[in-house]
Image (cartoon, rainbow, N blue to C red; front, side):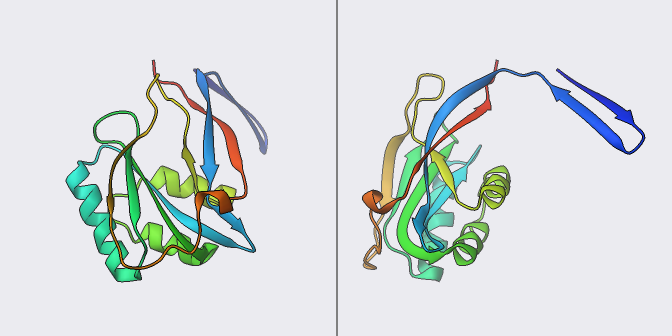
Amino acid sequence: MQATLRLRSWRLWVSLRRVADMDGICSALGDDRHILMWDFDDTPISQVNTALRLVQITYDLPTIYVLESNAAGSYLAYCFPSKPWREAVKIVIDTQGVDWNFVRLSMIRGYFTLRISAKRGVLPKIMGHLNSPVKPEATVSDLQKAHHYETSKKR
């Protein structure tokens, strides 16, 4: 439910919706460096793997880890290079099928965030990885912070 009221050059917008609290991991390594993260919705795993493999080869990236988010067709991916923010965003945007809402929110925040907590009672699970001879430049322990956020809760 939402309502909007406009008074001259001011607009008041009120929204009421169910939300769920989530925990995520952020891409920030410090000094404007980030790992890569992707979010795909309503995309078959074969298309996700193809898109990620293409960007992996194009940008000479290390191994990419693919997880099923919460239902068939929803996937997350992580990769551990250390890239300046602008370059990291370019690589993610160049990935076919990436969720544009994920990109938009990442641009607003200044870092990528992917959920690590359960959604509708389901934790993300590893689906596989795309091997690469390129060595990772970062590890999970290098990440600077977790992120607590809320998301709209589906009925």
